Image (tube, rainbow, N blue to C red; front, side, top):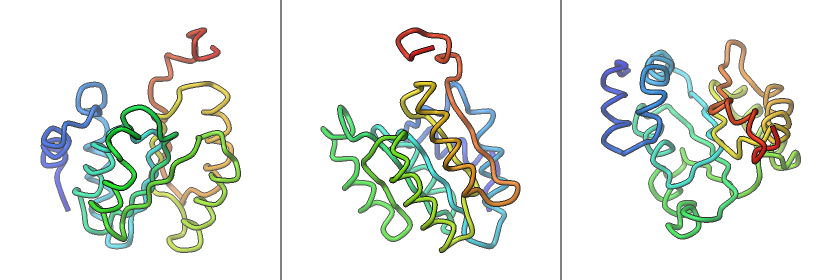
Length: 165
């Protein structure tokens, strides 16, 4: 069990981008989740360099972290998928794929539902394209635990033409 302040320090030490814009939100949510005795399952959409994924693993030994990333750019260059698997061992489940791939979303959702009863938290920091966000939410919301939380980041992009807003 960690306090929000301890969690914020983990975010800072691993250089997670969540510190600046979400540093007052995620530490409290994750502190509450770290108090659970059962497995806590988190899905992060958009893993980029893996800093937040690693932070989630470091918060509590009962955190199981899934991730989806399209696997290009920094993710590919830094071999993030392999690094996350090695870093988290059996608790790390990074996938390469698109957040609008319904087949992949259902595959992950079904696995999590069968093994753990559903997601405790989904963090959507993926493409920020409206249609992708809608697809992810429509599929993944069916795999949430009761009282699970679903966060969509950077919603202001829904007004930007380059994100089809």
